[in-house]
Image (cartoon, rainbow, N blue to C red; front, side):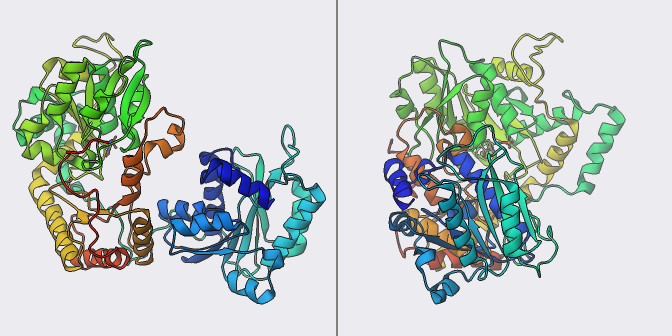
Length: 607
Ligand SMILES: *Cc1c(COP(=O)(O)O)cnc(C)c1O
C-alpha cells in the first residue's frame, strides 16, 4: 500500500491524483463531509482532529481556506515522502511519520491525544491486498485509535450498493460495518452516503456525547473573534422615506423613479453624464450585459475569452454565461491584473472577448485596454467590481469606450446589498447594456438581442439612495481604519506589507506574504488569534473545481499572488484594539523587514 501511494505521489505530484483521488472536487467533497460530521458531533467549539493517513496535509489547507479556525490539527502518515512535502508546506503544523500498527502504547497515547480521528481514504483502496487482509488492516487501525480518542472516529470505505465493485477498491456492506462498529463502539454509530459518492462515511461516537447537532457548521463566532468582513449598510429607518415614495408611485422595478434618481446620483458622484451609467441587479449581471452589449455571444469562429486566472470566479462565469470558453492568462506581478501587452502576445485568432480587471478596486486601466481593443479589434470589458472610489476620484482614467463594471455587493465599500453598474462613454454600449439587462428589449417591447433579467429593483435603488447620502461618512470611517492599519504596520516593522486604501478599495486590507511559508505562518497565527481572513479571489481560477480543465498559459504570478495575498478584517467600525490584534498576529509570523516582491506600486513588469 505504501508503495502504491508513493508511486501515485511521485507520478502526479502533490495533487488529488497524487493522493489517488479521481479529482480535487471529489477530495474536497469528502473533506467537507468528514469535517461536517466532526463538528456536528463535537459538542464544543474547539476540536482537535487527527488526520490519519494525512498524505501531504491537504486537509489542513482545506481547514485554513474554509476558515475552520476552531479545528486543531495533527497529521499522521506512514509515507516519509508525503510527510516531507506536508512539513515543507506547513512548517508550523504537527506532522508525524509513523506506522500506527508498529508503534508502542505510549507513542499512540501521545499522538492520538485528540477529540476525533478522521481517516479519509485510508480504507478505500485495497490495491493488491485481499478483502480479508484489508478488513484486518482496517479493524486493527480502528482498534488502535478508538480507545485513545476523546470523542469519536470518522472514516470512509467503498459501498457495496454500486453498479459494480472494483477489484482494487475495498467495498464493505452496511451490515458488516454496522455490526463491527456496534461491537467496537456501542450504539452511537452512523453512516452518511447522501453525496453522490460510491462510498460510505462511517462514524462512531463515545457514549457521553451531547446530542448531535449542537454545533452546526456555520455557528456564530465567539464574541471575541474578529470577523474578516462586517459590512454596514444604511439602517432600515433611513430607507423608509425612499420606500414610501415607491409605495406612492406603485412602481417596484423596470427603471422606476428611484433607480432613475440613483443613476443621476451616481453620475453626479462620478462627475459624468447620466447616459454613461447603467444600473444592474448585481456586478455579475452587469458583467454579462456589458459582454453582450460589446462582444455579443460567442461565435464558432471566436469562441474564446481571455480571462485573468487571478480574479473572482464571477469574471470567468460571466464570459461562460455568454457562451465563451475562458482561456486563463497570468496576471502582472505588481498590479495583480492582466496587461494588454501580455494579452497581445497570445494567439488571438479565435478570441472574441478579452476580460480585464482592476484587482481589488485599484486604478482602472481604461486607456491601455481601449488601445488594445482598437488595435486588435477584440471587444474588452473591465471587471472593476470594487473600483467605486476610483470612479469617484479619477473619472477621467476610469470612463472610456471600454465598459467598466462595478459591483455594489454588501461586501464592497459602496454596498447596497446586491447591485451593479456599467460605466461607459459610448452611448450605444449603454443602450445595448440596458437591452441586455431587460430581456433584449431595445426601446420597444420586442426581443432584439440576447439578454437576461438583470435590472436593479426599486427596493435596491432605495438602499442605493440612502447609501449615497451617507457615503462621505462611510468612506471616512473606512479610510480611518485603513490609516490605523498603516500605523500599526509601521510600529510592528511591517511597513509596506499591508496594502490598504487608497491603493486598493477601502473595503480591503491585504497582507502581502513574502512566500508560501510566510503565508502559511501568517494564516496559522491569525487563526490562533481568532482573527478571520479570506483569500478574496481564492487560489486562482484554475484551482476552482469548475475551471480545473480550462485552457491556460503559465500561471506563475497567479500561483504566487494567490498564495501570498491574504485578506484581513475590514469594517467601518473595526476598533483600534482589533486592528492591533490582527497586526500583532501577523508580526509574530512575518519574516522581519522582508521586502515582499509584489508590494511595489506600478505595473512595469509583464509576466
Ligand atoms: C464582487 C466581485 C464580483 C461580483 O459582483 P456581484 O455584485 O457579487 O455579482 C465580480 N468580480 C469581482 C472582481 C468582484 O470583486
